Image 1: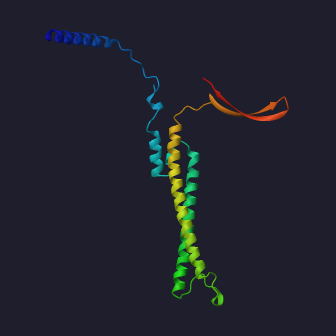
Image 2: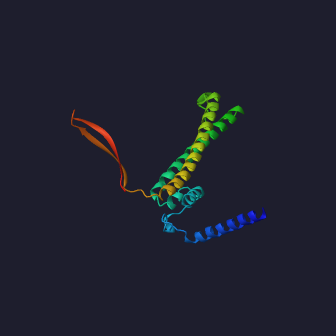
Length: 191
């Protein structure tokens, strides 16, 4: 029994040695996907998103899409302007309502004791301006997040080779049977 186990042990050791010896001639494949390390930057999308989060439009500048920066600031500036306008009107209506409740004169008092706005109108104005103010804040936050996502997505897609080898060309085709024009699309793959 020991003789048989010893025989199997030496057989396994011998075969392992041959297997180890055969591993020296392994075919080594050169990395041909990215030969130039500067051609692909895996951190580029995260850098663009970080820069856009720090300062809106900076991610677009990082991607060298300078023409997008005015749109980012126009969108965010419009949201801030609408928020500020509704906030100011809300405080005007709230102050007028508080003054009227205390029996004092407010900016919406009219001539001869006929107010321009009633108390119900002031309450309704406060609710409307508060709702519009909150909506403007939500839309502005959404636009801020959208410009971060746009910078990250653009940085990711900028690394892909997009040229005329892959094109979609809409065409107008003349049908010779009934002399009508048919709209078609053609997808070309050129290798």
